Amino acid sequence: MVEVTSANMGNCHFSGPGAGRFPTANSVINDLVMLARGEPDTPFPLEVERRIVSEIQGLFYVRFIIKDGVGIVRVIGELAEKNGISIYSILQTPVKDVQRVPFVMTTEPTTLTQVKE
Image 1: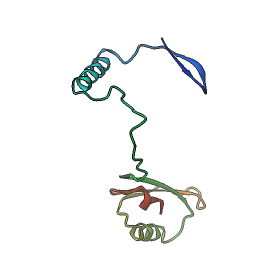
Image 2: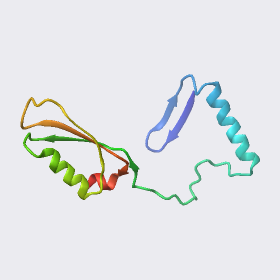
Image 3: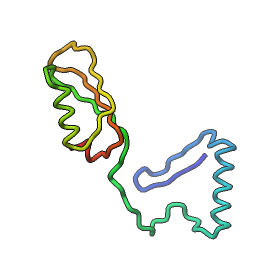
Image 4: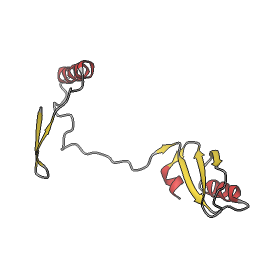
């Protein structure tokens, strides 16, 4: 059992089977290698400056709820082109309610900023 004390939660108790022998052995070996190299013994030192990156790049799944009509694919394509996004695929489910049609676009690799625009 592990007890963690914090200002926000007071005392918390955690119990369970643990990580298991292989994950635990891997962590122990990594710690020993780190110490043998003379690296700091604090895995997450507070005094080290961290750079936070808010931009990510990847493939995106974008879901729209649209009103059915002519030219939807053209409009989506124009918006994607305007923002430098290459479309990988488009999926529209059969229309049950013309006011609320689920429509999905997946992208080629792009950035989150481009998708949000």
